Length: 110
Length: 115
Image (cartoon, rainbow over all chains, first blue to last red; front, side):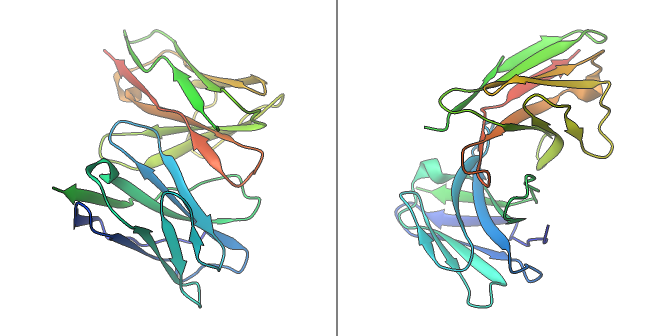
């Protein structure tokens, strides 16, 4: 799977939008971008995934650049409960494995 | 929907004993389940992939005789840590694939402490 690069940590004020970047410059045409998050001492939680179009669900929005070499996860109105480690993962369609990198530790401050 | 449970949530055992961890998909049938291990302040590391009714596929460096995986039904997989030692102390997490095979849903994890 293609490697992803994320900043190790970020801070965001409560109520503001949290924008988490991810670089995946070696992504292949059939590889999707997945985002998961892990709150302390819990299992990871699926957030969103996409191939090339921007995606939005009840949790977040995913913006993928036209060349697909990077993406941004947007939490529109961050709350304290959004404090977690966020993982950006690139994975081929039909591939079973998820390979976790180090992720971004997002801290939402009151 | 797509709820995965694990039991127990925490377990403490003596060195040399075996510990079984259960992973269940509560509201869907999971043809594939995965087992991960996570050390403090580290990322998740895939240990093995388990398909219902067949032998698990272990990642390189994971001892299959030490970490026994059974996936006897579409809703249950078990991980048994045999002859546990203190270095096996870790957070063990399972996940299961929903009907969309590209999305995995994770259990809450099991914290194992070996004394």
